[in-house]
Amino acid sequence: LYAEPASGRTARQIVLHALGSAASYLGPSIGNPPGASALAASAECGDVPLDEALRRLAGLVGDRVRAATPEERAKVREHPKGARTLRKSLRRILEHTWEHLAELSRREDGPQL
Image (cartoon, rainbow, N blue to C red; front, side, top):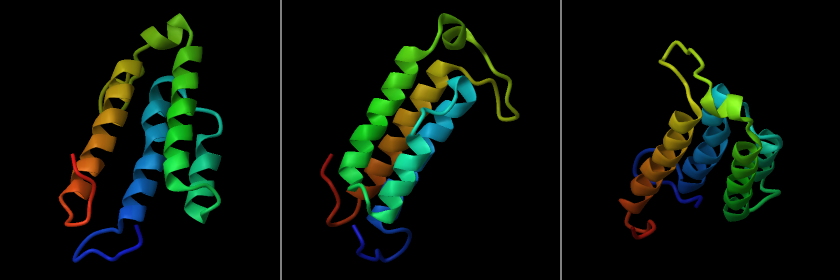
């Protein structure tokens, strides 16, 4: 995870980026999941292993989505980059994570898709 690639970020930096951005994608639609920022900070400090942090973040996002009221689920929030909905937020979280998994899989020692 710490190996310096020929160019770009280390695998650890990519995973931390994906971990931190998931909550920020959810935020504009229904708000950040409680505890997500603290979890990302703990993972960055090394207090929580990255694999555990990713699993816990998925749980926090799931808990926040399940707790969303019908009004929150239906709401369309205006945003300078386009309307935000819960559906769009969840889709972007999945796309963003997949993009970085694909990025890592292109590395010689990366995960196999």
